[in-house]
Length: 408
Image (tube, rainbow, N blue to C red; front, side, top):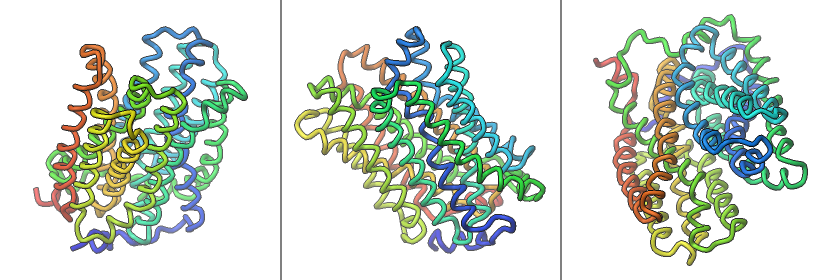
């Protein structure tokens, strides 16, 4: 049985939200769930100098995305049960707008950190709840909207990382960071309209209802999907944080190293466009997930043996391996039937997975300082590719979390 047939019970259009409004809401929130995290790195030196930011605070800025996505993501489903999914998502976007605009204006390191945390908390709410909202409203099992969502996530992160430094050079770092708060206002408008239409719908308040099933730790599919998401996210955030330094240590210029990172992230947009359809149509995902893991291993092997020889090739291989991210995101809807289970699964997979993302870059930094090089780090990252293949193979089985929970 393919995942397309498994999703048929969920293909019930919901009243109140038209197709155009749903597309606008998903597209606009997707492109706004990453820039608040990815726009800081390219201008972090300027921010640190302008705010006289201590080294410890600078390190905290780089760790905040993973920490907030994990910690606040755990609270998102409970918030949706109290307020409704659409109101919770709308408040999340509002937090993004206030946080991003506020931090671009402040002269205080403490306020910069607090406002960054507020913005990332809003993004975390969207990370968890939007896939469940898509499952509830999709008329095709979620394929089209998940394609739009996955591609938008990657595009938003890639674009903000690419344009932040040039914008800062032309207009200053405050403009480079603040513009994303203004752009987020565009996402607030359709979600406010959706919330006004849906907030009285009882179904909008049932996200994560635990009736009819046990804890998600008892679902093998949920656990393996969490591991797949966590391993991929860990590698992605390590690459975002450390890949340019690996290239610079190999003698590549800072500008070229930044462009190589942009190449890696841009390739991921194709994965967002491709993988939801692949999941819906493929008889098995096993060749795909094994392929992603092999590409990850080969990319790190190239960095280990000849980082400056074919730097574009290693970045491309790592970028292609990043197709595992939209795969894991799309599997949250594909491996669940009931939108309530989708919400619970999203609130389980993403927060724990982003915990991996928060710890990974820190551990890499410690290992690099202890060993004085990248050899040990890259060997361990190659080993993570093997673990990712194992998790991916288990998740590639056409099972549903709903059925595993009901069978307990």
